[in-house]
Image 1 (tube, protein in one colour):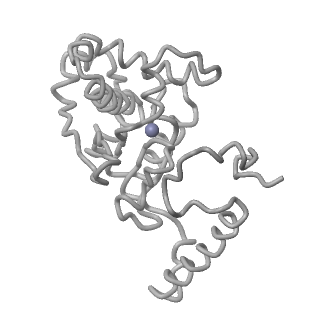
Image 2 (cartoon, rainbow, N blue to C red):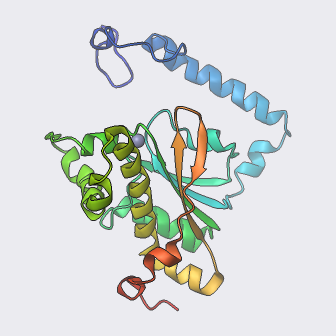
Length: 238
Ligand code: ZN
């Protein structure tokens, strides 16, 4: 039986709309990945015979990018970043949980060892993770993860409940989720230690609009937003 990349028979997907023309049969798609890779290697080597030799020497990325795992939000491609320029962490709905050893290790390594100058938390409109968190559904193992977003909703309940248009409320929750995950980055000792001693990294909250392809900086003024609670999260790293 033919199966897709996630192991499910293709018949399960038969009634699904073909979103993009690049959709191929699973075997052809998998083989195409290696063909694409060889094309990519060829294009990179046109930039210099030592392209990969230099890449193998090490990394000094300027940016830590924390974004959603959504297949349509291609971190490096949508920003035109080359290999070596962006350290990337992705998960469902771009969450920075205070108990997620994975995300916290990425942040620690990127800031304390790689010395990134910018941390970008990037959400996106039409985020399925955020939409799922807005619905009264039991999603099993996903429940505790999506609860992080439900907590964002609770923290901003007054603002969100005042938005009568459901689509607008959904988009605003996506923006507020980005904002709160930025705050979670700012809570970390790695961020506070580096920022107070070196003046970086700067934290940015962005949203990618799937409908236009455009990236939007939310221009969040964290100094103003955190002024009244700064003492709560101050870890005394200065
Ligand atoms: Zn998403």
